Image 1: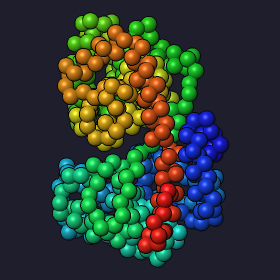
Image 2: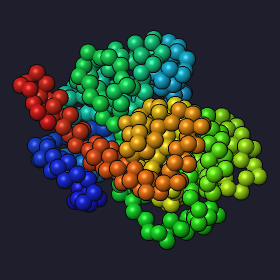
Image 3: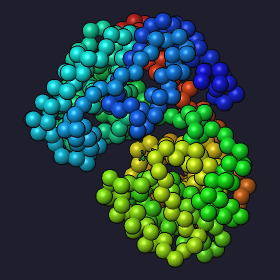
Image 4: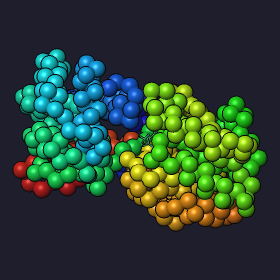
Length: 404
Ligand code: UDP
């Protein structure tokens, strides 16, 4: 995969900007550090991004810190507390966090011109900084953190040269320069690449979903904040007037008791309705998700609380009108009446479903707008451009004003 492959997909100006900035950074060293090589959005993004940056002539490396099970339990708690949902760490837990970071600092080669540390788990590596610009890249929502937990982390974050947050609203005040950088999708990944109609049809046949009538789709974990029960209620209301089916597709949630409970409730609520299809997708179902999204008439994401909502990005990229909850990063993507509709209730959701089912032309228009909106703002190429530009900008700190 190289930048060439994105010609005709990404904004031409964006590709030129990448080449131009990368030209100035050729042969220089960039390092990304996070806490997992597979699973989760951060790892997925780095897997796609690092080879592309390397192709540009930047000497980029990606290292993953190693930790024990208790360490990851501590950092999971840290993560939850920062999102305002967990308990505070004990002194012993903070010490473990420090110790594991210290050990990793001895093993990971931290020597680079520009270092991106992703999320809180490896944040303490900053204490081993020798040189270069160091950027803390926060992917989580820390807008309403547990105050004490944030205070501890902030002492570390303040030592960085800059911080990046995904959405302005997810950020906290820090004395260091802050940047917002939304997450992105890769249009050439299995989940987003163009598929043939045959392949889409084959997946629908495999899942026994009829394609002869409109399909409403929600792809998400079985989680109460994704409101799958509300989706069924909205579907039922709309179904009284328009023939259509509903597909709720999500992961298996074997190790998530809460997920299993929600799945059971969803199944009970949908029982006996042949128009509702509940799909349990195994991990690595990217191509199936791609096909389901491409075959859908309308994509729903009726979240009550949300991070950024990458499923919305994926659906808009596939020219689907999206009806979604007005929460988290969704309103950055769903521009009401332009790329889809923002809803605040079951009734509102049902109303918009009916409106779109009765106006296929409207759905097509919103879908076109949606794809363009994602192309301009939320593709991996823009994300790479932002990382490179931020590197240059941070090195110029204290210099004259620079325009990017
Ligand atoms: N996803 C998946 N399998 C599933 C459900 C979701 O691969 O069974 C993917 C989905 O396509 C998207 C991501 O997981 O890329 C979910 O990201 P999002 O930001 O929408 O929600 P989160 O689950 O992170 O709250």
